[in-house]
Length: 358
Ligand SMILES: Nc1nc2c(c(=O)[nH]1)N[C@H]1C(S)=C(S)[C@@H](COP(=O)(O)O)O[C@H]1N2
Ligand SMILES: [Mo]
Image (cartoon, rainbow, N blue to C red):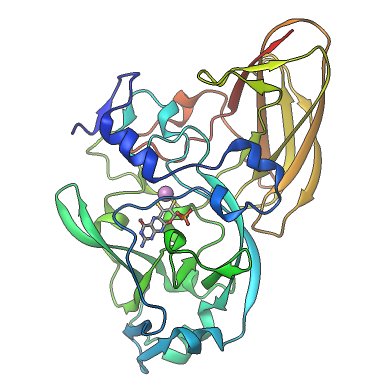
């Protein structure tokens, strides 16, 4: 299998990945909290089968006090429920040319769930991190082979990052027990980063005395200009807005058809680094922009609703676009070329929705 392709067709392997890892239906942007079955999924290997009754989570490595917690012990700790908008860092990959051969997301690798769990920090404090500890490694129960390397899915965070109060060990999703496909019985939630940091099916947590060099950390999830470029690690979600495609779709092409008139357009916008400052709408492919109204912000790490009344009184073909800007002043590029990188990560170029007004 080649690393990268300029083909406009999807390979059998990409379609296979897309069937296992479905996206959120964009009409699902209407829900402030994404229903579980609509939330996107990204599962690198197989969903592990784990008995919650005998489940235990060891916390070890560079700690004074190694712990082993059962699920009941974790659930007995202080619980919080927070909405977190999650996005796969590969979202938008299929819009890049050439594109990396991997999950061929268009723009649907998103969802905002309400996660219930216990903060990670106090558990690490109880384990007593030694001065030598520099990173915390989160290992999943899922194992597989990627680029010829056999490994457990595992990723680390710096100690400083891991001790932030927002870091959560989650066992509930939208008021239900965490479902198998989303990491049951226990997963990490890193609310401002792209999804890869939120390790599912936790097998163990290990304090490390040197930086973790595993494949999912050091090789994947880097913004690289070429295969050889070491690149920079992918971390926080960049600003991104999406709209519910208005009107009705053609079954196969998904092209939208609208009747003449005033068209209410709605969607959501988010950014990991800072809250959303502004959402703009364009009906001419991004040549001219008009401010949309901001609606409800679903928690600090959820998404912001937005709304725009588009006056579509001229029959014709239009390209609707939406663009978010965050409080830090970051915004979205107009063209995917501006987002291009070798692994196909973090493509937050503006969404383009072709519509016919009749
Ligand atoms: N153990 C494990 N954790 C994982 C993954 C995985 O394959 N295995 N995929 C990661 C990626 S790339 C993403 S985008 C999110 C997806 O979470 P979701 O499937 O609950 O939406 O989980 C992350 N955590
Ligand atoms: Mo991902």
